[in-house]
Image (tube, rainbow, N blue to C red):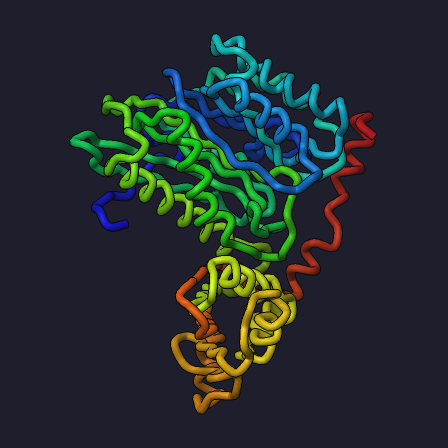
Length: 417
């Protein structure tokens, strides 16, 4: 960002006027005491906005949250991990609504003022018999310093919780933005597979907040990929309650631009954290495409390279195989000319004009052996550019994802299938 800010503690609960809570329900494993149900609540009215998966198969909580946003603004979000409540039919909608109802009345809210999100195994009914006994404790535990617990409660295959909070001056007022995200597998653009929640005590009207969320998601979560898979539950929800005391931010004013820049930075940091914590990944790779005729051409090239299993496998092996990169450039459907393509790895030329560059292969191998490095692709045909963040693809990823259906055994014991 081109203005000063400071990172602060508290994550999703850092902005003023927000309370959070998390409890253990044993949703996936009754014997486990890990946190798996969380609540985010604003003590005052909010503006709200969201972005959701573009998968045509949408989980029940996605459908319910989308419907609630169409009716007005949210003030609370209830979220669980362990079960996605996806491909669960009419019962899934009923269960998502029941999750909203469990906290709406005690908080003095209407059902449509609650957002609901789920993540976990697809295809199994939500074990409501495990959630119901714990909602009272969830409500009783609401506090201003439990943001970290929410970040823990939403993770599935993540190796650690991912959260962030910043404070900065905006129009003479101190403003805070907090957020948390989960995601490690089934990560691909449009939008990337994860759950993300953002809170702020800035005063932003709903229409401005919607535009901010959509623009910032496009520049962050839509620019990451781990395995090229898009889930059924992708959701970003943002709440703005104005508790900082600042006047409303005008849509086209300088403060709106500054605020949007801050949100974009927060979302991009969270998006990068998702890639770094990808399922059994060993590399974080930035792919910068430049010199394209159009924005869409640059995007096509970046996505083709970042999703290529061959390219990602070579990164895992520490192989600076620029041939795999240029072949992905070629099938990207972007307008390119082979003889104009330059490829740099860690700033060193690997391919110039579509041909092998003079850089010793040993130098390129040293770069690709690093945990993080950048690939630069210059099409030399225009001025458009696009950046994406990707990872390698490891044998351990395949082993990790060979089976996740041990949960079905417990579901049968519970009489859910």
